[in-house]
Length: 40
Image (cartoon, helix red, strand yellow):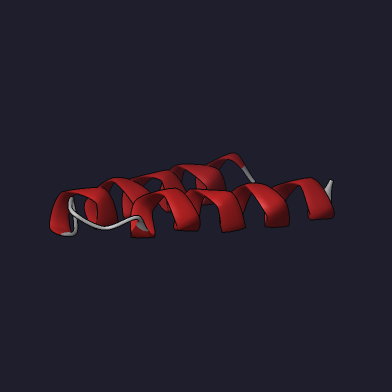
């Protein structure tokens, strides 16, 4: 599970780098946080 979070974190960083002018990075993080808390 730790590797999974790491992977998503890396993807989130890439999204933030590619689309710095959008809110995609924040939205993506929100979705991941929701899924993580749902699984726990």
